Length: 153
Image 1 (cartoon, rainbow, N blue to C red):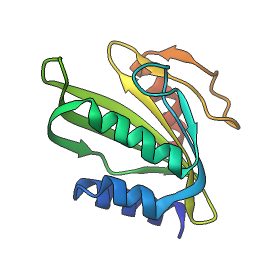
Image 2 (cartoon, rainbow, N blue to C red):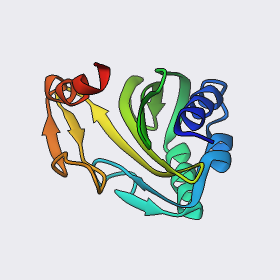
Image 3 (cartoon, one colour):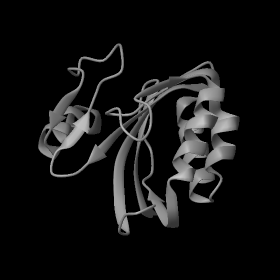
């Protein structure tokens, strides 16, 4: 599968509530998944077994799930990104909308890395190896948009 085909299938499956099935089908066995900060979830995990455990941990922290909205993917070579908003209530917290930008890298017909950046007043972000974006940086949305401008032209 091409990066575009992988991206389209991931979004389609996730929009249909098949998030875990999408991971099983599209993630490489040795995938790396990175969160912007260490917290309730580990900052980085490697391999499908660790991905499954991370999903179980996240699900155990959810009180109510009301739905999510995914953008269409933006493709750039072996990478694609998806904006993902989730209407959720975590245990012991008020209902909220969590927004994140997910950046995926593909190779050999599979997703080999999945990186998340969370939105707030600033975007807490980090860079995957091989990009020219400084690691572990705080970006305004305007700064992030400026990086993607050349891709839109």
